[in-house]
Amino acid sequence: MNPQSDPELVVLLDDDGRNIGSAPKSTVHHRDTPLHLAFSCYLFDDAGRVLVTRRALDKRTFPGVWSNSFCGHPSPHESVDDAVVRRGRQELGVEIIDLQCALPRFRYHAVASDGVVENEVCPVFFGRAVGTVDADPSEVMDSAWVPWDELCAVAQSGWAISPWAVEQIPLLQAAGLGRRS
Image 1 (spheres, rainbow, N blue to C red):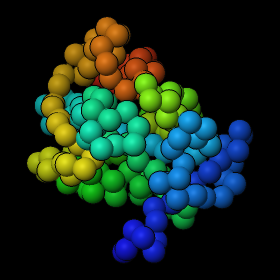
Image 2: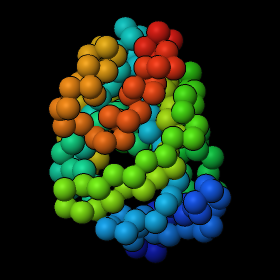
Image 3: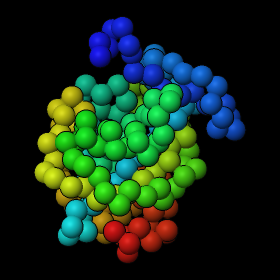
């Protein structure tokens, strides 16, 4: 697929979360980002550790920031679950099993230091990674497997991690994610 002739599209949403169309991803993230559909995923290994990743420096939003395992956007005619599995393969080179949606209605608005805005309805998933992480360097510049409790402590410490992870982690912790993974 040629990105020039068939750009990656994101699903645009109204304030009630209803699909109102689509737009090329390359045109969506700016200082007045429209509300759109995305997802976040936290992957665990067999030892119960969670994969955290550092966003590549070329990312449009929050470059170089540590975050959850990966994020993405479903295409207009793709289920969010299918998009999570697709992006896990593309971004990290792993298969995902035991995929579950933990926060189906999570929504956030965050402004990066350069003024670019994230404005997303962003269901939050967790699952188990199968295989060795082979991250796409255009997406991920570094990764680490860490105990869930350590990630929770980092989220509460004020250290620089993505604003969506700072909001998601306490909600996941309250829902008992660390005990189920």
